[in-house]
Length: 469
Ligand SMILES: [Zn+2]
Image 1 (cartoon, protein in one colour):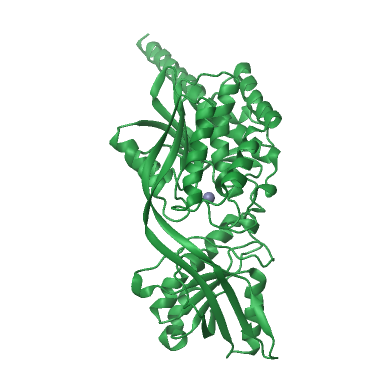
Image 2 (cartoon, protein in one colour):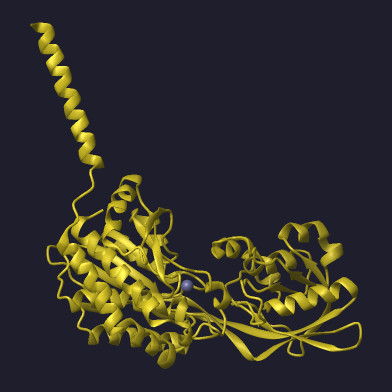
Protein backbone atom coordinates (compact mmCIF):
# COMPACT_ATOMS: atom_id res chain seq x y z
CA UNK A 1 0.00 0.00 0.00
CA UNK A 2 2.80 2.32 0.95
CA UNK A 3 4.52 1.48 -2.31
CA UNK A 4 1.35 2.11 -4.24
CA UNK A 5 1.04 5.52 -2.59
CA UNK A 6 4.56 6.34 -3.58
CA UNK A 7 3.88 5.26 -7.16
CA UNK A 8 0.69 7.33 -7.30
CA UNK A 9 2.52 10.36 -5.90
CA UNK A 10 5.32 9.94 -8.42
CA UNK A 11 2.94 9.61 -11.36
CA UNK A 12 0.95 12.62 -10.17
CA UNK A 13 3.98 14.82 -9.76
CA UNK A 14 5.18 13.77 -13.22
CA UNK A 15 1.82 14.84 -14.64
CA UNK A 16 2.09 18.21 -12.91
CA UNK A 17 5.53 18.80 -14.38
CA UNK A 18 4.38 17.76 -17.86
CA UNK A 19 1.30 19.95 -17.69
CA UNK A 20 3.33 22.96 -16.48
CA UNK A 21 5.73 22.51 -19.36
CA UNK A 22 2.81 22.34 -21.74
CA UNK A 23 1.49 25.61 -20.32
CA UNK A 24 4.79 27.34 -21.00
CA UNK A 25 5.02 26.05 -24.54
CA UNK A 26 1.34 26.39 -25.35
CA UNK A 27 0.65 29.24 -27.75
CA UNK A 28 -2.04 31.70 -26.79
CA UNK A 29 -5.29 31.69 -28.69
CA UNK A 30 -5.69 34.11 -31.56
CA UNK A 31 -7.62 37.02 -30.07
CA UNK A 32 -10.07 38.35 -32.64
CA UNK A 33 -10.23 41.80 -31.06
CA UNK A 34 -6.46 42.15 -31.13
CA UNK A 35 -6.33 40.96 -34.72
CA UNK A 36 -9.02 43.48 -35.64
CA UNK A 37 -7.21 46.37 -33.98
CA UNK A 38 -3.99 45.51 -35.80
CA UNK A 39 -5.84 45.14 -39.09
CA UNK A 40 -7.26 48.57 -38.55
CA UNK A 41 -3.82 50.06 -37.86
CA UNK A 42 -2.64 48.83 -41.26
CA UNK A 43 -5.87 49.82 -42.98
CA UNK A 44 -5.93 53.34 -41.54
CA UNK A 45 -2.25 53.89 -42.26
CA UNK A 46 -2.57 52.78 -45.87
CA UNK A 47 -5.80 54.66 -46.50
CA UNK A 48 -5.11 57.99 -44.82
CA UNK A 49 -1.32 58.15 -45.32
CA UNK A 50 -0.79 60.68 -42.54
CA UNK A 51 2.86 59.71 -42.00
CA UNK A 52 3.50 60.36 -45.67
CA UNK A 53 1.92 63.81 -45.41
CA UNK A 54 4.06 64.54 -42.36
CA UNK A 55 7.18 63.37 -44.14
CA UNK A 56 6.48 65.71 -47.03
CA UNK A 57 6.36 68.59 -44.54
CA UNK A 58 9.52 67.54 -42.73
CA UNK A 59 11.41 66.99 -45.99
CA UNK A 60 10.17 69.98 -47.99
CA UNK A 61 9.15 72.65 -45.45
CA UNK A 62 11.97 71.95 -43.00
CA UNK A 63 14.55 70.09 -45.10
CA UNK A 64 18.14 69.54 -43.96
CA UNK A 65 18.57 69.64 -40.20
CA UNK A 66 22.08 68.87 -39.06
CA UNK A 67 22.58 69.38 -35.31
CA UNK A 68 23.09 72.99 -34.34
CA UNK A 69 21.82 74.33 -37.67
CA UNK A 70 18.86 76.63 -38.38
CA UNK A 71 17.20 73.63 -40.03
CA UNK A 72 17.43 71.63 -36.80
CA UNK A 73 15.82 74.49 -34.84
CA UNK A 74 13.02 74.63 -37.37
CA UNK A 75 12.56 70.84 -37.19
CA UNK A 76 12.17 70.97 -33.40
CA UNK A 77 9.42 73.59 -33.57
CA UNK A 78 7.78 71.89 -36.54
CA UNK A 79 7.46 68.46 -34.91
CA UNK A 80 6.34 69.99 -31.61
CA UNK A 81 3.54 71.83 -33.39
CA UNK A 82 2.47 68.71 -35.32
CA UNK A 83 2.06 66.73 -32.09
CA UNK A 84 0.27 69.64 -30.37
CA UNK A 85 -2.12 69.95 -33.29
CA UNK A 86 -2.83 66.22 -33.06
CA UNK A 87 -3.86 66.82 -29.45
CA UNK A 88 -1.41 64.40 -27.83
CA UNK A 89 -1.83 64.45 -24.03
CA UNK A 90 1.49 66.10 -23.44
CA UNK A 91 4.09 67.59 -25.78
CA UNK A 92 7.37 69.04 -24.58
CA UNK A 93 11.00 69.73 -25.40
CA UNK A 94 13.93 68.13 -23.64
CA UNK A 95 16.98 70.45 -23.76
CA UNK A 96 20.32 69.00 -24.88
CA UNK A 97 23.63 70.58 -25.91
CA UNK A 98 24.80 69.34 -29.33
CA UNK A 99 27.91 69.69 -31.48
CA UNK A 100 27.70 72.20 -34.30
CA UNK A 101 29.67 71.73 -37.52
CA UNK A 102 28.94 73.36 -40.86
CA UNK A 103 30.10 72.49 -44.33
CA UNK A 104 31.52 75.18 -46.63
CA UNK A 105 29.25 74.46 -49.55
CA UNK A 106 31.11 76.89 -51.83
CA UNK A 107 34.15 74.60 -51.93
CA UNK A 108 33.80 71.05 -53.20
CA UNK A 109 36.52 70.33 -55.72
CA UNK A 110 38.84 67.43 -56.51
CA UNK A 111 40.75 66.54 -59.68
CA UNK A 112 43.95 65.07 -61.06
CA UNK A 113 45.78 65.47 -64.33
CA UNK A 114 45.91 62.15 -66.15
CA UNK A 115 49.01 60.71 -67.84
CA UNK A 116 47.73 61.96 -71.18
CA UNK A 117 47.37 65.48 -69.81
CA UNK A 118 43.60 65.54 -69.27
CA UNK A 119 42.01 67.13 -66.21
CA UNK A 120 39.83 64.47 -64.56
CA UNK A 121 37.28 65.92 -62.15
CA UNK A 122 36.22 63.80 -59.18
CA UNK A 123 33.05 64.09 -57.13
CA UNK A 124 33.95 64.81 -53.52
CA UNK A 125 32.11 65.57 -50.28
CA UNK A 126 33.72 66.36 -46.93
CA UNK A 127 33.03 63.88 -44.15
CA UNK A 128 30.90 65.41 -41.41
CA UNK A 129 33.26 67.12 -39.00
CA UNK A 130 36.20 67.52 -41.37
CA UNK A 131 38.48 70.54 -41.14
CA UNK A 132 39.08 72.52 -44.33
CA UNK A 133 41.86 72.26 -46.86
CA UNK A 134 43.73 75.56 -47.31
CA UNK A 135 41.57 78.10 -49.18
CA UNK A 136 43.64 77.61 -52.32
CA UNK A 137 43.31 73.84 -51.95
CA UNK A 138 46.14 71.33 -51.66
CA UNK A 139 48.04 69.24 -54.17
CA UNK A 140 49.82 66.05 -53.18
CA UNK A 141 50.82 62.56 -54.22
CA UNK A 142 48.45 59.75 -53.36
CA UNK A 143 48.88 56.39 -51.70
CA UNK A 144 46.04 53.89 -52.10
CA UNK A 145 45.15 51.42 -49.32
CA UNK A 146 42.32 49.10 -48.36
CA UNK A 147 42.76 48.96 -44.60
CA UNK A 148 44.08 50.83 -41.58
CA UNK A 149 46.71 48.11 -41.09
CA UNK A 150 48.07 48.86 -44.54
CA UNK A 151 48.68 52.45 -43.45
CA UNK A 152 50.56 51.10 -40.43
CA UNK A 153 52.69 48.95 -42.69
CA UNK A 154 53.49 51.85 -45.02
CA UNK A 155 54.52 53.97 -42.05
CA UNK A 156 55.85 57.52 -42.31
CA UNK A 157 58.02 56.66 -45.29
CA UNK A 158 55.03 55.78 -47.42
CA UNK A 159 52.49 58.24 -46.07
CA UNK A 160 54.12 61.51 -44.98
CA UNK A 161 53.18 64.49 -47.13
CA UNK A 162 50.71 62.43 -49.16
CA UNK A 163 46.96 61.96 -49.43
CA UNK A 164 45.89 58.56 -48.14
CA UNK A 165 43.20 57.10 -50.40
CA UNK A 166 41.07 54.39 -48.74
CA UNK A 167 39.47 52.29 -51.45
CA UNK A 168 37.61 49.38 -49.87
CA UNK A 169 34.42 48.56 -51.76
CA UNK A 170 31.12 47.13 -50.54
CA UNK A 171 30.99 43.35 -50.87
CA UNK A 172 28.19 42.62 -53.36
CA UNK A 173 27.95 39.01 -52.17
CA UNK A 174 26.50 40.02 -48.80
CA UNK A 175 22.71 39.80 -48.75
CA UNK A 176 22.55 42.29 -45.90
CA UNK A 177 24.28 45.44 -47.10
CA UNK A 178 24.44 46.61 -43.51
CA UNK A 179 27.28 44.09 -43.15
CA UNK A 180 29.14 45.81 -46.00
CA UNK A 181 28.56 49.15 -44.33
CA UNK A 182 30.01 47.70 -41.15
CA UNK A 183 33.04 46.31 -42.97
CA UNK A 184 33.90 49.55 -44.80
CA UNK A 185 32.89 52.14 -42.21
CA UNK A 186 36.41 52.42 -40.77
CA UNK A 187 37.47 54.40 -43.86
CA UNK A 188 35.17 57.26 -43.04
CA UNK A 189 35.19 57.06 -39.27
CA UNK A 190 38.86 56.40 -38.49
CA UNK A 191 40.66 57.02 -41.79
CA UNK A 192 41.82 60.55 -40.95
CA UNK A 193 43.15 59.57 -37.53
CA UNK A 194 45.29 56.77 -38.96
CA UNK A 195 46.54 58.79 -41.95
CA UNK A 196 47.46 61.76 -39.74
CA UNK A 197 49.42 59.49 -37.42
CA UNK A 198 52.02 59.08 -40.18
CA UNK A 199 51.97 62.66 -41.46
CA UNK A 200 49.47 62.52 -44.34
CA UNK A 201 48.25 65.96 -45.50
CA UNK A 202 44.71 64.72 -46.16
CA UNK A 203 42.71 61.55 -46.64
CA UNK A 204 39.91 60.54 -48.98
CA UNK A 205 37.77 57.42 -49.03
CA UNK A 206 35.54 55.53 -51.41
CA UNK A 207 31.94 56.33 -50.45
CA UNK A 208 30.24 53.71 -48.28
CA UNK A 209 27.87 52.87 -51.09
CA UNK A 210 26.23 49.86 -52.71
CA UNK A 211 25.71 51.86 -55.89
CA UNK A 212 27.97 52.24 -58.91
CA UNK A 213 27.09 55.90 -59.39
CA UNK A 214 29.22 58.95 -58.65
CA UNK A 215 27.25 60.59 -55.85
CA UNK A 216 29.54 61.01 -52.84
CA UNK A 217 28.35 60.05 -49.34
CA UNK A 218 29.05 61.95 -46.14
CA UNK A 219 28.74 60.79 -42.52
CA UNK A 220 30.42 61.06 -39.16
CA UNK A 221 34.18 60.94 -38.74
CA UNK A 222 36.46 61.58 -35.80
CA UNK A 223 39.82 63.06 -34.88
CA UNK A 224 42.08 62.12 -32.04
CA UNK A 225 42.90 65.72 -31.23
CA UNK A 226 43.57 69.05 -32.88
CA UNK A 227 47.10 67.97 -33.86
CA UNK A 228 45.78 65.08 -35.89
CA UNK A 229 43.13 67.03 -37.76
CA UNK A 230 43.59 66.63 -41.49
CA UNK A 231 40.92 67.21 -44.16
CA UNK A 232 38.92 64.04 -44.86
CA UNK A 233 36.36 63.50 -47.63
CA UNK A 234 34.36 60.88 -49.50
CA UNK A 235 34.72 60.28 -53.24
CA UNK A 236 31.90 59.02 -55.45
CA UNK A 237 32.33 55.34 -56.36
CA UNK A 238 32.98 56.13 -60.05
CA UNK A 239 35.54 58.77 -59.00
CA UNK A 240 37.26 56.33 -56.66
CA UNK A 241 37.51 53.80 -59.50
CA UNK A 242 38.95 56.44 -61.85
CA UNK A 243 41.56 57.48 -59.32
CA UNK A 244 42.51 53.88 -58.59
CA UNK A 245 42.83 53.01 -62.29
CA UNK A 246 45.05 56.02 -62.95
CA UNK A 247 47.26 55.26 -59.95
CA UNK A 248 48.04 51.87 -61.47
CA UNK A 249 49.69 53.51 -64.49
CA UNK A 250 50.72 56.83 -62.99
CA UNK A 251 52.04 56.43 -59.45
CA UNK A 252 53.33 60.00 -59.37
CA UNK A 253 49.95 61.62 -59.99
CA UNK A 254 49.01 64.58 -57.84
CA UNK A 255 45.53 64.95 -56.44
CA UNK A 256 44.05 68.41 -55.97
CA UNK A 257 41.58 68.80 -53.10
CA UNK A 258 39.61 71.83 -52.03
CA UNK A 259 36.78 71.47 -49.55
CA UNK A 260 35.81 72.94 -46.23
CA UNK A 261 33.98 72.68 -42.96
CA UNK A 262 34.06 74.50 -39.67
CA UNK A 263 33.35 73.72 -36.02
CA UNK A 264 31.32 76.14 -33.88
CA UNK A 265 30.68 76.09 -30.12
CA UNK A 266 28.13 73.51 -28.94
CA UNK A 267 24.56 74.65 -29.46
CA UNK A 268 21.40 74.31 -27.39
CA UNK A 269 18.94 71.97 -29.06
CA UNK A 270 16.16 69.59 -28.04
CA UNK A 271 14.64 66.14 -28.17
CA UNK A 272 10.95 66.55 -28.98
CA UNK A 273 8.55 64.40 -26.98
CA UNK A 274 4.83 63.70 -27.42
CA UNK A 275 2.80 61.37 -25.18
CA UNK A 276 -0.45 59.51 -25.00
CA UNK A 277 -0.95 59.02 -21.25
CA UNK A 278 -1.58 55.53 -19.94
CA UNK A 279 -5.07 54.97 -18.53
CA UNK A 280 -4.05 52.31 -15.95
CA UNK A 281 -0.29 52.55 -15.55
CA UNK A 282 0.65 56.09 -16.60
CA UNK A 283 4.10 55.75 -15.04
CA UNK A 284 5.02 52.79 -17.22
CA UNK A 285 6.49 54.11 -20.44
CA UNK A 286 6.84 52.64 -23.92
CA UNK A 287 9.19 54.81 -25.98
CA UNK A 288 9.03 54.86 -29.77
CA UNK A 289 11.29 57.11 -31.79
CA UNK A 290 13.54 58.12 -34.62
CA UNK A 291 16.17 60.82 -34.95
CA UNK A 292 15.22 64.31 -35.99
CA UNK A 293 18.63 65.50 -37.15
CA UNK A 294 19.83 64.69 -40.66
CA UNK A 295 22.93 65.26 -42.75
CA UNK A 296 23.31 68.51 -44.65
CA UNK A 297 22.79 66.97 -48.08
CA UNK A 298 19.46 65.72 -49.41
CA UNK A 299 16.40 66.06 -47.17
CA UNK A 300 16.92 63.30 -44.63
CA UNK A 301 13.69 61.71 -45.85
CA UNK A 302 14.70 58.09 -45.31
CA UNK A 303 17.34 58.90 -42.70
CA UNK A 304 15.58 59.53 -40.48
CA UNK A 305 12.54 61.59 -41.34
CA UNK A 306 10.84 58.23 -41.87
CA UNK A 307 11.56 57.13 -38.31
CA UNK A 308 10.16 60.37 -36.90
CA UNK A 309 6.89 60.16 -38.82
CA UNK A 310 6.69 56.42 -38.08
CA UNK A 311 6.73 57.27 -34.37
CA UNK A 312 4.30 60.20 -34.50
CA UNK A 313 2.12 58.25 -36.93
CA UNK A 314 1.98 55.23 -34.61
CA UNK A 315 0.48 57.37 -31.82
CA UNK A 316 -1.84 58.92 -34.34
CA UNK A 317 -3.16 55.45 -35.27
CA UNK A 318 -4.09 54.86 -31.62
CA UNK A 319 -5.97 58.16 -31.67
CA UNK A 320 -7.79 57.30 -34.88
CA UNK A 321 -9.16 54.08 -33.40
CA UNK A 322 -9.80 55.83 -30.10
CA UNK A 323 -7.67 53.25 -28.29
CA UNK A 324 -6.63 54.42 -24.84
CA UNK A 325 -3.37 52.64 -24.00
CA UNK A 326 -2.95 51.24 -20.47
CA UNK A 327 0.64 52.48 -20.39
CA UNK A 328 2.08 55.78 -21.52
CA UNK A 329 3.25 55.78 -25.12
CA UNK A 330 5.93 58.31 -25.77
CA UNK A 331 7.03 59.38 -29.25
CA UNK A 332 10.55 60.81 -29.14
CA UNK A 333 12.33 62.70 -31.89
CA UNK A 334 15.95 62.31 -30.81
CA UNK A 335 18.41 65.06 -31.68
CA UNK A 336 22.00 64.48 -32.86
CA UNK A 337 22.14 60.79 -33.76
CA UNK A 338 24.32 61.49 -36.78
CA UNK A 339 27.28 63.20 -35.21
CA UNK A 340 27.22 62.86 -31.45
CA UNK A 341 24.24 60.90 -30.06
CA UNK A 342 23.77 63.60 -27.44
CA UNK A 343 19.96 63.36 -27.61
CA UNK A 344 19.89 59.63 -26.88
CA UNK A 345 22.37 60.01 -24.04
CA UNK A 346 20.40 62.90 -22.52
CA UNK A 347 17.15 60.93 -22.78
CA UNK A 348 18.63 58.02 -20.84
CA UNK A 349 20.13 60.36 -18.25
CA UNK A 350 16.79 62.07 -17.67
CA UNK A 351 15.00 58.72 -17.42
CA UNK A 352 17.44 57.68 -14.72
CA UNK A 353 17.43 61.02 -12.88
CA UNK A 354 13.61 61.16 -12.82
CA UNK A 355 13.45 57.45 -11.87
CA UNK A 356 11.15 56.67 -14.78
CA UNK A 357 9.94 53.13 -15.48
CA UNK A 358 10.56 52.13 -19.08
CA UNK A 359 8.83 48.96 -20.26
CA UNK A 360 10.23 48.95 -23.78
CA UNK A 361 11.92 51.20 -26.32
CA UNK A 362 11.48 50.94 -30.09
CA UNK A 363 13.50 52.74 -32.75
CA UNK A 364 12.91 53.18 -36.45
CA UNK A 365 16.14 54.26 -38.13
CA UNK A 366 16.46 51.86 -41.01
CA UNK A 367 14.53 53.91 -43.60
CA UNK A 368 11.04 53.97 -45.10
CA UNK A 369 11.29 50.73 -47.06
CA UNK A 370 9.00 47.73 -46.48
CA UNK A 371 9.18 46.48 -42.89
CA UNK A 372 10.36 42.90 -42.50
CA UNK A 373 10.75 42.25 -38.79
CA UNK A 374 12.05 43.50 -35.49
CA UNK A 375 15.46 43.01 -33.97
CA UNK A 376 15.17 42.62 -30.20
CA UNK A 377 17.59 43.05 -27.32
CA UNK A 378 16.11 41.60 -24.16
CA UNK A 379 15.87 38.23 -22.44
CA UNK A 380 15.49 34.90 -24.25
CA UNK A 381 12.16 34.37 -22.46
CA UNK A 382 10.87 37.66 -23.83
CA UNK A 383 12.09 36.78 -27.30
CA UNK A 384 10.25 33.45 -27.04
CA UNK A 385 7.06 35.26 -26.06
CA UNK A 386 7.37 37.61 -29.03
CA UNK A 387 7.28 34.70 -31.49
CA UNK A 388 3.70 34.06 -30.41
CA UNK A 389 2.71 37.56 -31.60
CA UNK A 390 3.74 36.91 -35.19
CA UNK A 391 0.31 35.43 -35.86
CA UNK A 392 -1.15 38.95 -35.76
CA UNK A 393 1.08 40.23 -38.58
CA UNK A 394 0.69 39.80 -42.30
CA UNK A 395 3.81 37.93 -43.44
CA UNK A 396 4.47 40.65 -46.02
CA UNK A 397 5.16 43.04 -43.17
CA UNK A 398 6.55 41.66 -39.91
CA UNK A 399 7.69 38.07 -40.33
CA UNK A 400 10.21 37.69 -37.51
CA UNK A 401 11.52 38.81 -34.15
CA UNK A 402 15.24 38.15 -34.06
CA UNK A 403 17.86 38.29 -31.34
CA UNK A 404 19.89 41.49 -31.20
CA UNK A 405 19.01 44.92 -32.48
CA UNK A 406 17.51 48.16 -31.32
CA UNK A 407 18.77 51.60 -32.25
CA UNK A 408 21.56 54.08 -31.65
CA UNK A 409 19.30 56.55 -29.84
CA UNK A 410 17.65 54.05 -27.49
CA UNK A 411 20.92 52.20 -26.86
CA UNK A 412 21.85 54.46 -23.92
CA UNK A 413 18.45 53.79 -22.29
CA UNK A 414 18.93 50.05 -22.82
CA UNK A 415 22.38 50.21 -21.25
CA UNK A 416 21.42 52.56 -18.40
CA UNK A 417 18.11 51.08 -17.26
CA UNK A 418 18.19 47.66 -18.93
CA UNK A 419 15.10 48.55 -20.96
CA UNK A 420 14.34 45.89 -23.60
CA UNK A 421 14.72 47.45 -27.03
CA UNK A 422 13.44 46.82 -30.53
CA UNK A 423 14.68 48.05 -33.90
CA UNK A 424 12.45 48.04 -36.96
CA UNK A 425 14.15 46.11 -39.77
CA UNK A 426 13.21 46.83 -43.36
CA UNK A 427 13.98 45.57 -46.84
CA UNK A 428 17.25 47.48 -47.05
CA UNK A 429 18.61 46.54 -50.49
CA UNK A 430 18.43 50.12 -51.75
CA UNK A 431 19.32 51.95 -48.56
CA UNK A 432 23.06 52.34 -49.10
CA UNK A 433 22.57 53.70 -52.59
CA UNK A 434 21.39 56.98 -51.10
CA UNK A 435 22.36 56.89 -47.40
CA UNK A 436 23.88 60.27 -46.36
CA UNK A 437 23.69 61.70 -49.89
CA UNK A 438 21.82 64.34 -51.83
CA UNK A 439 19.64 61.49 -53.16
CA UNK A 440 17.88 61.00 -49.81
CA UNK A 441 14.80 63.05 -50.70
CA UNK A 442 11.06 62.72 -50.20
CA UNK A 443 10.48 61.63 -53.81
CA UNK A 444 12.39 58.42 -53.08
CA UNK A 445 9.87 57.35 -50.44
CA UNK A 446 6.95 55.15 -51.41
CA UNK A 447 3.83 56.08 -49.40
CA UNK A 448 2.60 52.52 -48.91
CA UNK A 449 5.98 51.20 -47.83
CA UNK A 450 6.35 54.07 -45.35
CA UNK A 451 2.86 53.53 -43.93
CA UNK A 452 3.44 49.81 -43.42
CA UNK A 453 6.26 50.82 -41.09
CA UNK A 454 3.99 53.14 -39.10
CA UNK A 455 1.34 50.43 -38.70
CA UNK A 456 3.97 47.85 -37.71
CA UNK A 457 5.18 50.11 -34.89
CA UNK A 458 1.62 50.82 -33.73
CA UNK A 459 0.88 47.08 -33.72
CA UNK A 460 3.97 46.22 -31.69
CA UNK A 461 3.22 48.97 -29.18
CA UNK A 462 -0.36 47.72 -28.93
CA UNK A 463 0.80 44.17 -28.18
CA UNK A 464 3.37 45.29 -25.60
CA UNK A 465 0.78 47.52 -23.95
CA UNK A 466 -1.78 44.70 -23.84
CA UNK A 467 0.36 41.72 -22.87
CA UNK A 468 3.52 43.23 -21.38
CA UNK A 469 6.92 41.76 -22.13
ZN1 LIG B 1 19.76 57.45 -39.20
